Amino acid sequence: MAYHLEGRLLEVCNCRVLCPCWIGEDPDNGTCDTIVGWHFDKGAVDGVDVAGCTIVALAHVPGNILKGNWRAAVYIDDKASPKQKDALLQVYTGKQGGPVGDLVKLIGEVVSVEQVPITFDVQGGRGTIKIGDVGYAELEPYQGTTGKVTTLTDTIFSTVPGAPVFVGKSPHYRAKNKALGIDVDLKGYNALQSTFVFDA
Image (cartoon, rainbow, N blue to C red):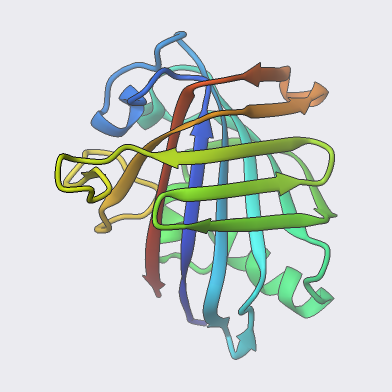
């Protein structure tokens, strides 16, 4: 069993900029409601090509992110074939181990797994994500004096271990999931984007 996945990440949440979870502090509101989306530009899981697919977790984090017990709803792009869906779920349920397996150990309960239309258009710290009718977010990057996008590196927590993250904010972030108790519609809150390479 093995996987190699390369692509882009987008993460938004209801913390102010910058989300304290990334440096191991408690979320601004005591809890955190977040969208984390991984889009695969290339990659395979046990020989199944998953390039072009997107998987998203809509999650409620009940306290400090490192303590786990997240509750999540998982969404997979409706363009993914049954084989691609099964392959990605093998990875994102932790059955394939590796860096993704380490991350999903923080999830205590998955309330649902659905295939919905997903639009992922994020690059260089800017773009949008739309997850069916349950979530939408825009991303704008912060920039330094040279015009380069501001990045965050060497943090205690990361959904893309080893990769620098573009620091940004979301002009509009909305998400709704009754099972998770999530109902947010915010402007100007935390957003992060990065690239990743996962191997196991």
